[in-house]
Image (spheres, rainbow, N blue to C red):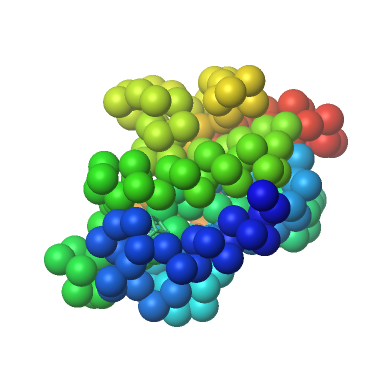
Length: 196
Ligand code: SF4
């Protein structure tokens, strides 16, 4: 199976209840042979409307981390989420919520296959749902971030989700959590042999 075939299958997916409330499936995007893969939680409003991952405010912050911080192009990496359809409170499409365990379980087929097909050298998990799923743990991101872990032999660096950074200090300012993310990203750059 190719990544394009997997995407076509995901776009028809009705494996969980999020299928009934989504506008579009947000499969993921980027270089299908990326050395680095970012994995977030799930699509938000802008992503659901556009069909693209990380395009809202949090996505713009992630893009700045990639382009201004790491000096990579966004299209050089691959960006995906644990669930491919937007989870909202009561399915009303108003307030986002974290994906529920049954939704993560139903959607895990796609993420696992994406990782297998892309075969990145390094994975960065953004926030608790992605980190807990990939590392098969109930530990929180505060304890797990900043240290190397492993998923099927691929080094995994957990760090805070950009939306967490926006909630704790906004888009500007050198907050402690932003410094922690930058330290995590520098470890990733070192692992990939990128100039820090
Ligand atoms: S969230 Fe995943 S499993 Fe659920 S309908 Fe969307 S693509 Fe299918």
